[in-house]
Amino acid sequence: MSVAKLGELVKKRGSYKAKMTQFMTFLKLMPDSGHSLTPSQVLELEMRVSRLEVLYSEFDALQTELELLSEDVDERYSEREQFETQYYAQLSRARELLAAAPAPPPPRPAWTAPAPAALVASTTS
Image 1: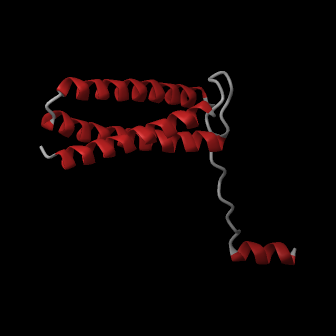
Image 2 (image 1 turned 180 degrees about the vertical axis):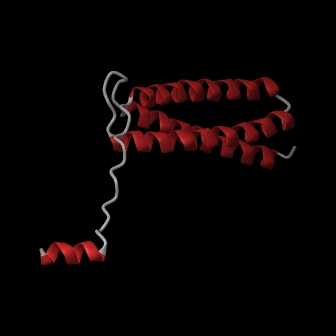
């Protein structure tokens, strides 16, 4: 494998690691599991978890390519193990926070205008 291609893959992997760090930083700002999340925090955390799951899938594909093309597979396996350890720890904490969050209130029924005949009847009485 060319050194340039290897460098490109390693650089992409660095981008995935940076995104993982951003997720970890976000989670540190969340209240402890004993405290409730606000509805907007729940929504944001759900979206970030979804994105983290996609990130892991992309990382896994890239890391597999690195492992297949690399001469030093032990170093590559070590990188995978480190990333996966962080991923599962952060995902577990996020899901724990979401599980402890109170259920959202049921949606309020949409207001519907009365039928025109009902309007006429109520104004003439």
